[in-house]
Image (cartoon, rainbow, N blue to C red; front, top):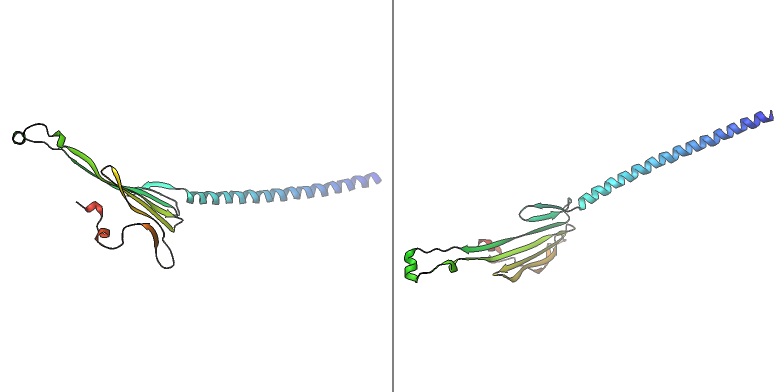
Length: 177
């Protein structure tokens, strides 16, 4: 009888331990599933956030780079004014002018090249740098500025820039003869 009680007690004890271990395993597994789901959700959010911070390059009136949320922008562009001429003379002109070839009178040169970089940092800080090259030399700094787009009163810029009034501001250099 004592053996039977000892065996029954052992079985009850084993079932109790096994049952609590099984429920603990289930709790661990259940908690692990929650942790994995939370990790995957956090990874997806991090991937979405990283996608928002990735610069995308495209061409629209110059080379542009910007993030999906448009907080960071970069635009590179410019204009080139190239002059050239190929002259030829007929026989009458050569006779009057003393003859010879007119190839020395042919020309080709860059009258002006104006290159710039501008953009936005954190959606509020603006910047621009524009250089002017003419006749194979740097002739001047046209714009070099940094500023704030959204302040409580107005747009704020500091640096070297064109005066915001007068005909030189209204007429672009690309329309000058």
